Amino acid sequence: MFDSYPQLSGALPWLPLADLPTPVEPVSGIGSNAWIKRDDLSHAVYGGNKLRKLEFILADVLARGKTHVITFGATGTNHGVATAMLCQQLGLRCTVLLFEQPPSTTVRDNLTRMRHFGAELQFCGSLANTVRHYYLHPKRLSRRHYFLFAGGSNVAGTMGFINAVFELRQQIDTGQCPLPSQIFVPVGSSATLAGLTVGAALAGVESDIIGIRVAPSHLGIIPTCTPATVNQLIRQTCAALTKAGLSPPTIPTAKLVDSYYGDGYGVASTAGSRATEKFAECGITLDQTYTAKAAAAFLDAARQSTDVQLYWHTLNSRPVERVLERSHDAGPKTRWF
Ligand SMILES: Cc1ncc(COP(=O)(O)O)c(C=O)c1O
Image (tube, rainbow, N blue to C red; front, side):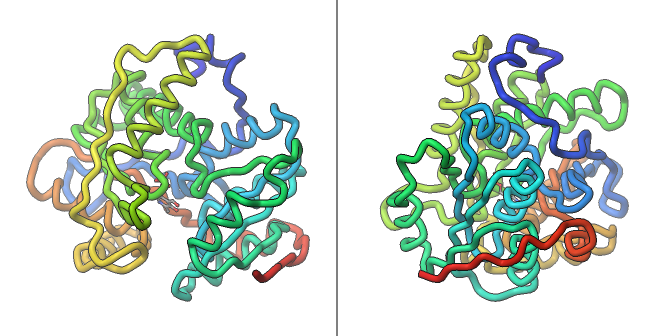
């Protein structure tokens, strides 16, 4: 992105924290036109889609002179793990406010990881209570604290996935993969879809970016994951780009598909379970919350068309043992509300 638009490099804080570019590969056994972008390998200790966002977010934290990041997520939050790991690397304090989700291996492993990365964990019970603690936090007005929305989905985080499309553009231009007709990605807090959508417009990648909604569309009457909420993040990001000296020619709109959501956030779906089995044959592990549902949509498209399809794999694939080997245990700091 900075090579194509050098005017952004002075204006947008950025730190190289991830292992990029991630490989792009054919998915063996699914068809000659099925491709996968391996963001699971975006870091040697803990990969996944959050690393790209944090390159911009944590640079923004440091540029603003903040020393303590406060964020929130479910007890199995991948975002909490990635944030805790990179905060530790940069000497920043990290607090993660947690709401309950059903126990699973992911929850257990991610709590272990966050503790090893020295995060202060605050168990807040329900989502509503956690959100209340986040917005009414006693440090809200402190100059040292940076409040980071769940999933790292703020404008800085969205820049990470704009940058990602420039990476893919380079891989297409150098013959590492063909131009996909469609790109499939799961959508939770939305910055991944928002960034890919804006990035495709800026980088001239003429693929349809298809977001598969995996999180509730509304909390009560408040819209949380709808075309309108994603498009709002897109508009905010385009405004930040304009301020940084680059006017996107048109403001693109997001494509969000609801039909793979199934019975709820984190609840396995039949199509997702089938996709998990199919991908396991190709050596790729999916999770029932995010990636299985997006992969199910990708498989349906690959079956129905001979066009090139790309599935953007957003789930970490590094084993929990990597954390235990590579990080020093700063010790668990846990509070209960
Ligand atoms: C593995 C995985 N995939 C996809 C997503 C969704 O990305 P976003 O929150 O940017 O919509 C998340 C979010 O937590 C995730 O952990």
